[in-house]
Length: 475
Image 1 (cartoon, rainbow, N blue to C red):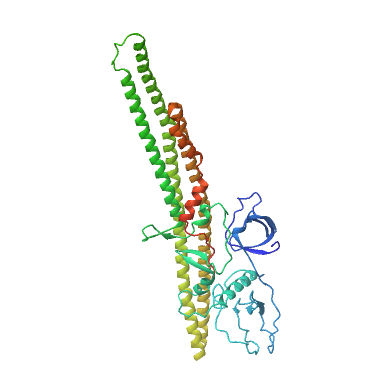
Image 2 (cartoon, rainbow, N blue to C red):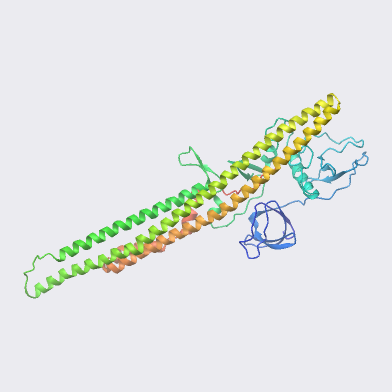
């Protein structure tokens, strides 16, 4: 695999590794070294560093950027400015270096009979046969992307409201404004944290709620679990409060009982034994008073304090991810609007082209130029909207990974805090009543067996919504 090229699916800051390689989504990296731990070493723009293998996709075939010889039998030389290229599927296409027009059909400047009729035109980002922007190298890359998509679809009607939805359908699918890869079109994605059943791997898709009426996001499923955990911790603190009340009431009753003057007239050695028994009640009452005081300061208050901090963090996470998802929905709406505008411009261009075939006139040619310019502008706008959408989705993806891992860490912390304080409860109970150790020993044994990782695995298996992560939308 060393020496292969891979395309980045998501942006990576490089901060997770001491020698991390920073990159944005959609860049090409040369693989230098592959390790079993899920990290690869790569080279980009003269810089070398490490990155997660799950953030990239290997390119099975190289992208040819250099022109090839135009040796079509029976055809003369290409018109001035035209060059022939070969697509990744081995099909010839032609690019005008002056106008950036791209076409499957050989330019008609010299007589040549095409081998087979063409039933399609390239779609955006090469809009109406024109590259819209970028350096020549970037434009050739766009041509490869466009032609690869176009070669596998039927020509769409001029009035189609989504000029590139068909070709996207083969490799990606957008669900609730999030774009996912089609399983049949892409290699299986590697988990970000293999064998850990981590939150960041299994909650990308949305699902129906328990009633089956509304759709909730995978992040909301995680939040519901965290909020449930918060409620459980609150109820545990309430339980400890009730236990404190019992101890205080018990101590009060013991103290009161020790002061009752019953059998106070007993004399002799028996009277001394009786007095010692009553005194032991007062001593026992003091032990229970101390036990209730320690329960309050060492168990109840820490549980409540941790729960308050937990609540603030949950609220912050919820607002942050919700805002990012709203921005993503807004960007997707802009993409759809740009698609419709491009379809209208393409339809208008086709109508004017048909009018030119019927009646030649300078005015019609000028109208075609204007229509082509507007169509190209609409293509530019669609590309811009898709770029903004991909940026928004990349930001949402990064924050989802970061936040779900933070939720995971907080859940581990929550379980550990509760475990420690319940063990403190049993320890205090041991100190208070040495005669009842057998009643708390089973509890102690169970607390020692608490395993947050196992609990998370079982819970994730039952509640996971989907492990396929988002990818950039392609047009």
